[in-house]
Length: 351
Image (cartoon, rainbow, N blue to C red):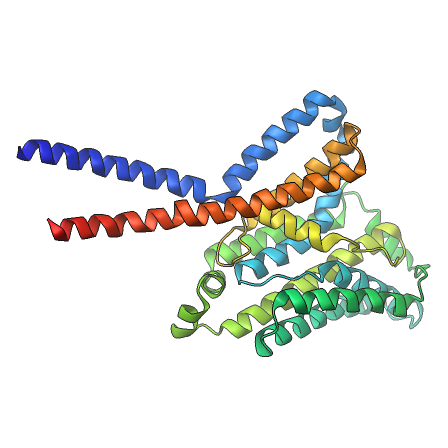
């Protein structure tokens, strides 16, 4: 009888270990995104072999390098439990302000570029202070800042592109380092690696996860959650400014359309990549894979000749499904794995 009980408990223990491994595997958001990305690439290639042409791959990576820079900051902010809807307007405002500093005020290019970054970081600081100190929800504050930024772009430019810009700006935009990709892609790669290291390997990153996962507990253990959130808002603002100025260099002018619509693409991408809207969960790799996946979908639908309206519908459906899967994963997998050991302990005590 005792041997039967031991054998049953052994089977139960091995079954629980298998379930825990499966749970941890499913809980990793980037695994599913990577598989989905591979399937989509194969599908679009079968539909139209030109999808994997050198020209189309370069175009996808070029767009990802711009949006991905902002996605780095948005991932950090979402991990900290907040989000920013104003990043597109901040990118455009920073770009036109930098262009104006070069043309109207004839400032040296380095100072003008620094001025653009300071504009983005300043807007991020305002967002952070209002959300953290005044307790206004990030959705309301950053949505309001989106409209304010769009209005300021028109005020700064009077509705006209800002040009001509110094030749060095054109040189930055037309630089070709590898595979037809320039400074924006180089910056994107190094910034992504640095941000991933900070989130995964440093105390700063662990504190950011704690801030987004359970702010009350984080405060009790001595983490200044207010400073972490404000710093994350400033980071995403500065990165949005940098992305906007890279586009400015690519276009050789400060146009009013820079950053238009980026906010939804960025948030949709990082959420699809498994970065939770509820804070405290997600990885840099997952967020950036999500941005790449959405760009693959958009480009693939263009290549196979799908109407542009259906492209927007596809992105919306993917984002809703991603959020739904995030909720499902939290409710049934992550919560389930933490409940199993507790149940096992209760059974042991009862016996």
